[in-house]
Image 1 (tube, rainbow, N blue to C red):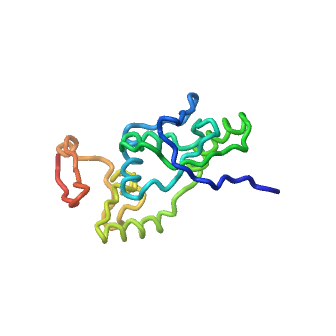
Image 2: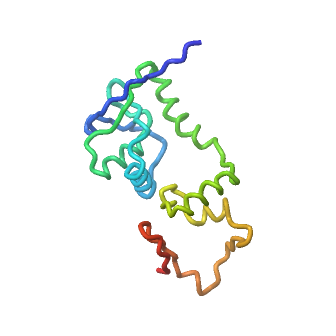
Image 3: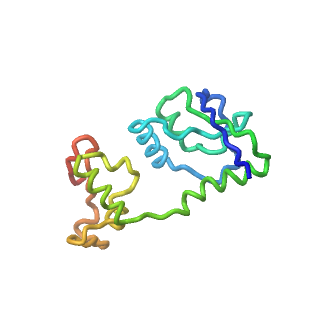
Amino acid sequence: MEIKTSQHIEQIDLKKLIPYARNSRTHSDIQVSQIAASIREFGFTNPVLITENYDILAGHGRVLAAKKLGMDSVPCIKVDHLNEFQRKAYIIADNQLALNSDWNFDMLSVEIDELNDVKFDVSLLAFTNEQLAEMIGSPEEPVDNELKADEKDKETCICPKCHFEFVK
């Protein structure tokens, strides 16, 4: 069986890219900001997949983040071997396949602990503090899901640069 692949990556002007009008995957402002922060830190490491007519197949969130960052162009791969219905199906499958994976929480804990040890900004991982506590909470400190009455209005913030923690 021959597997078709597209290997050529080219920089494409953002103005040429056409979002799929019936894209069923949504991207909140928060998620777009997270993607933008990831691109700023790690670079644009995942090309946008497009048709020969510049229609976006995969990478709508990355394109929104690139626009937010003021980029003029993004790396793209043209996918020209799919028919119309394969394209529609791929757009859905590409989003769902990523959701079908899970985490090895023991390994995730080791990795995040190591990043914390070197003061890496773990907010770039796109987890909330609550998610991290739920997934890898320290056995010595059980996660208390119920806030005391006087703590309900308080919000803890962490400076992404110096990691100073303060209550807002």
